[in-house]
Amino acid sequence: MKIKLSYILAATLAVCSTASSFGWFANRNQWGVDAGNGGYSSFNCWRSGNDMLSNWSGVWRKPNQYVMLYPSAVEGWNFDGNWALWVTLNNSTSYVGCYLLPTINNAWDGDDVWDVAIDAWCFSSKGGYQTDEVMMWNSWKNMQPAGSFLGYKSGYEYWEAWIGWTCRSMRTWGKSGSIDVKLLCQQAGVPTNRSIAGVQSGAEVCQGSADVKLAGYSDWWKSN
Image (cartoon, rainbow, N blue to C red; front, side):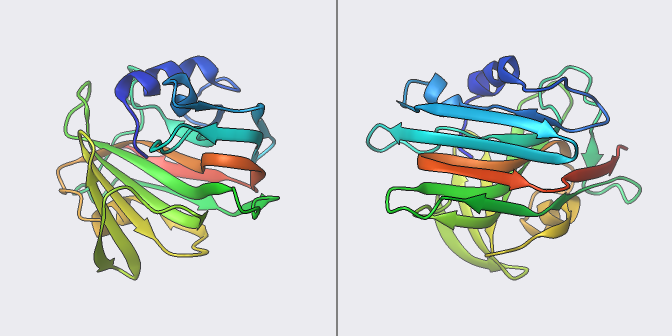
């Protein structure tokens, strides 16, 4: 997801429910709109039990712009100050994963542009800036990852872009269930001295009207 640091920070002002170091929260992230790159008629995001739900309508974007909204379930937070989620790739005793079972409805009109993805953020040190972003695309419409297609890794399409950090996208249709996020980052080629500090799952929305549900979403992690 191509996103500037200031927009990540601004998104914390739009949290739908209280953030916790030990429980995901629903984040009404509209970073592309906040950057002045588009707009929408309506946009909602909330947690209900263990489900993350969101709906949007009338999303539009200016020419040559990318993602406008990213309603998502967030564990950890890249800039929350406590770095509670800190899973180093070469530490055999730490781990992080999530259960992803998305459904997206009313999303197949000709003007709909979206993807459903996990988005993991990696750092070289606490308090620094992100060095790597790893996405796993589950489904999509009229959209491709940032950067260039470089072949296949571990059965996924592999795309890579430099956007101030290395954005690595792993794409395969319908991948769901229990996802080992640490393994995903290793498969994407993130240097093993990096640490995962945030995991987000949801829908990147560029255009159109639809709704998404992450049914029974959960995550599990053990920091270093």
